[in-house]
Length: 167
Image 1 (cartoon, rainbow, N blue to C red):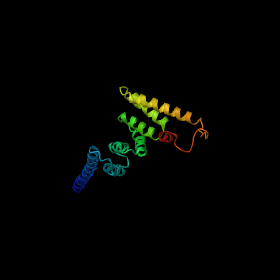
Image 2: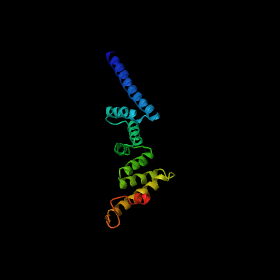
Image 3: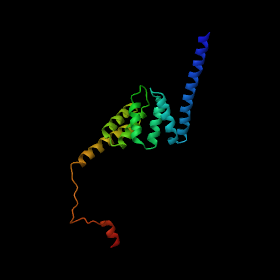
């Protein structure tokens, strides 16, 4: 009889803990709905910190918050973990690619865009951004081949455009 009471109390406590956990996710989701990303971030970070395995929904929501707050470094860090999950939305590869592209990691970004293009063939953005990433990487490689020098006989220390307007 005593073990029944203990099991009952444990079930209530576990249910209460899960209820509190889901309430936190709902609270964060409400903040995201109202575009209050800076308020949602600490809530989501606490949720993820408590669950050492990581709550997939909270991690995705947190990565999206960082992306929408233009914190591409943290967004890319989280998206790198999220793409390892078994079933994710293909758009995650696109968002990860965008974060990497912003950080100047064009090779890895291209791979993510190609993955997205394969998973969502009806959306042309994946292929376009993959091509863009490849082209920008080629341009950066070409830019390193040339040295730019100031030709003092042609250029002055002043702004030539501004001088023409004043003349």
